[in-house]
Length: 131
Image 1 (cartoon, rainbow, N blue to C red):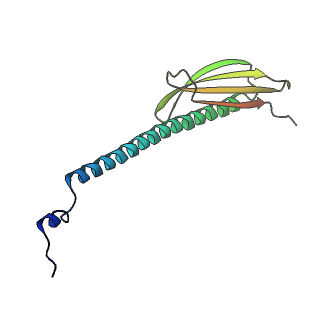
Image 2: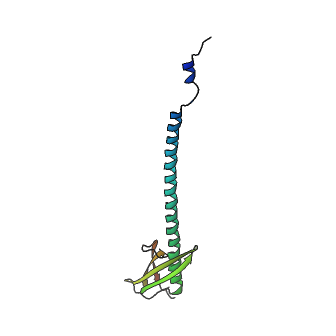
């Protein structure tokens, strides 16, 4: 039978306070990094949602313009829309093309009072050929 000395028994009990503190520091740094990454993902998701909704607003404005006036007169128009519980403003510029029966329609959509557009869309309007 082997006898254990008092000095040897002390090393077999478990972790020291220093080892536990170092482990806690490592875990806290890892959690901090995960929290920052998650925060960045949430911010990116919000930006993506804003651009997607603005794109839908632009598509709606373009469709409404084509339905109301297939060959709209040239010029600039501004408007507002309420979509997805948000207030949007849009700016539409209609330009003549080389084909006199066609117009280019450029739409920019802004979130509320933003200075930079959240989405832009270009399309064309023309008269339907008559039989």
